[in-house]
Image 1 (cartoon, one colour):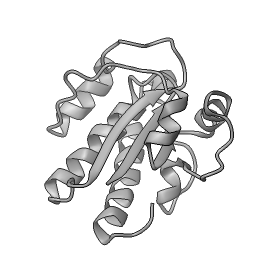
Image 2 (cartoon, rainbow, N blue to C red):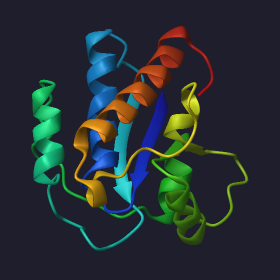
Image 3 (cartoon, rainbow, N blue to C red):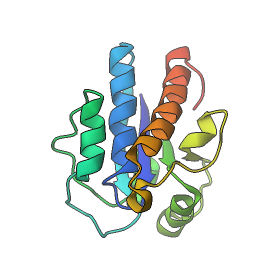
Amino acid sequence: MIKILFICHGNICRSPMAEFCLRDILVKANALSGVEIASAATSAEEIGNPVYPPARQKLREHGIDPSGKRARQISRPDYEKYDIIVAMERYNLRNMERILGHDPARKFRLLMDYTDTPGDVADPWYTGDFDEAWDDIEKGCRAMAQRIINGEKL
């Protein structure tokens, strides 16, 4: 079993989009067995809130229903529970270290580092551009999915 946790600031836009995107890709490839996927926030601002409406709409455009997802904050036990913890941007990595401490097991990753265009996932919270964020997320999740399918290390 491989356990993946996606992280963004509030857990209402990018990280739930990544959670549901990767799950959808793996389901369609008949490769979800043995994979657990979740998402969380580094902040407490949105705890309990559903996926942000424009992010929810973007997921639904791709046939993905995020109903029931509620924002939660990452906590210290998550470090032990998950095999990899995938941030949407460098700012999230800094906050993950603040909350979880250092990363001795080298579990922290950036989603776009799985692609040929490393960097941060575009942040739609400030730009309103959920298309750009989706494109980044889908590209990163497809690259991760391919590694999972091929049995490669994440």
